Image (cartoon, rainbow, N blue to C red; front, side, top):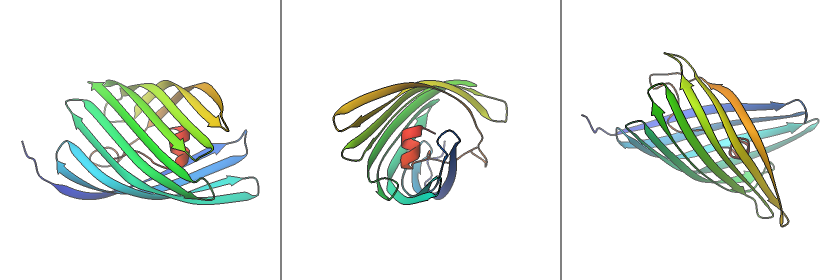
Length: 186
C-alpha cells in the first residue's frame, strides 16, 4: 500500500437553466489540492458565476477551503467559503457524506449560504446507482429552507439526475462550490 503525496488542479463548469423564471446561472470553479495520502485531500477553490435574467446580468466570485476523505466506501467532504459581487455576498458552508455498497450508494448533504438578512439552507438524502463503466443515476429527497427578515419558509423537493465523470478517477476531487450550487444543489 502506497502513501505517496501529490498536488493537483481540477475544474468544473455548471449551467442551470430555468425556463419558468427566464433565468440562467453559469459557474466555473478551479480547485487546487494536496493529497497527503491515498485517502484524503485538502485544498482551496476560486470561481466565478454569472446570473442572467431577461436583460439583466449579474457577476460574482467565490473562494474558500475544502477537504475530503474516503476509506472503504465511506466518503466525507466539507467546505467553507465566501461569495462576493453582484450575484450574492455572504458566507457558505457545506458537509456531505456517503457510503457505496458495490454499485449502490446512499449520501446526505447539508449546506448553508448566509448573506446577513438572507439565509438559505439545504438538506438532502440521495440514493445512487453506479452503472458498469458508466454514469451514476441518482434520486433524492430534500428540504430547502430560507430566512429573510426573521420570516422562515421551507420547501420540500425531489431530485433526479445523472452524474458523468471523465478521467482516470471518473470526476474531480471536490464537488462544485458556487452560491447557486450551495442553494440549488449539485
